[in-house]
Length: 155
Image (tube, rainbow, N blue to C red; front, top):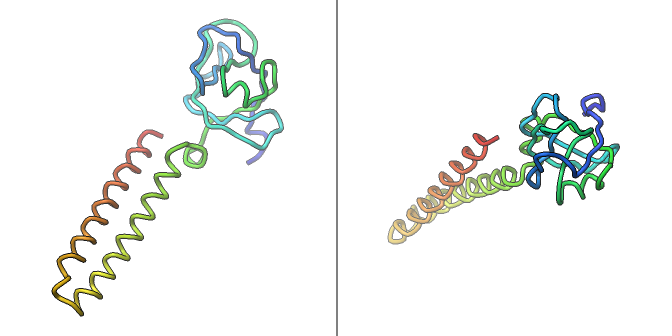
């Protein structure tokens, strides 16, 4: 991504109201950004955070706790930009993991269906058992897909 998308700013821990951990408050008068990607100035490691706007007139952005430590501490220079849909997937904590679970359950349901077809055509007495295995794995896939869609709606 181009560097001109990033906005530089100084960060502090003193502001009103104090932000919850994992939230970056921008200076008063800045347009609110609900989700943003932040990094230490010139750094490569980025973090997806919630956004807000300070109510006091102090200079710079405000963060607390682990986010402040990640950004380099009080008075560190940072860069931020609005998070894109791709950022939310790549840097979001649960979406990428849920996508992986959904894909793996899909693959396992396909494998179970193929194994059921091959086994039930050669041994009809075990057809019910293999059919139920396929049904259970397919239900798992549907549930994982529903959870993935729910995660996408929250983006």
